[in-house]
Amino acid sequence: MPFQWPIRVYIEDTDLGGIVYYVNYLKFMERARTELLRQCGYSQQQLAQDDVLFVVTGVEGRYFKPARLDDELLVSVIVERASGVRVTFQQKIIRASDSVLLCQAKVDVACVSAERLRPQRWPAQMLERLMSNFVQQLIPEEK
Image 1 (cartoon, rainbow, N blue to C red):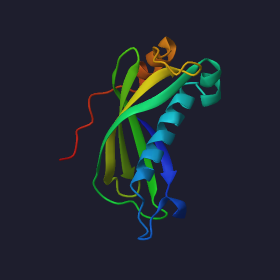
Image 2: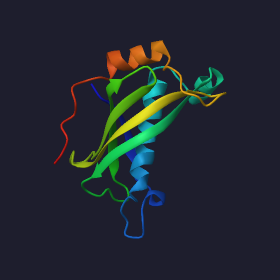
Image 3: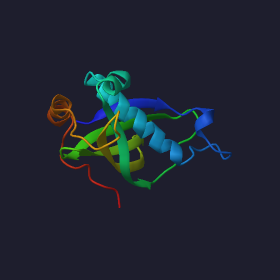
Image 4: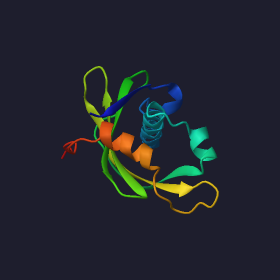
């Protein structure tokens, strides 16, 4: 089952035309991944103290429809695949009022040592929680 996080569109998220500026969708996705980890019991501060950081190593996304000022959005996250060092998340953003798909992306996230900034394996317990709770068959992609 996907993890979902609600986000409201504020004026700071929009361009002069009143629609969400494209890069802000990536910010919304980052927030949802952060909240997913928090729900699994991992705060960013605790992870850094445990010598764990996550870095985005790749994003492949598509935009379909615009979000506008004051829209409520739902950002979903599932784990598509995981290796020792890298996890690929599949994320979608829909408008809550009508469930219209606005954007989707695959986001590759690597685990690195906070101290050395070198790749390291994802913490086993964290990966187990993610894999047991937030994995499902691939979300069909829009064409």
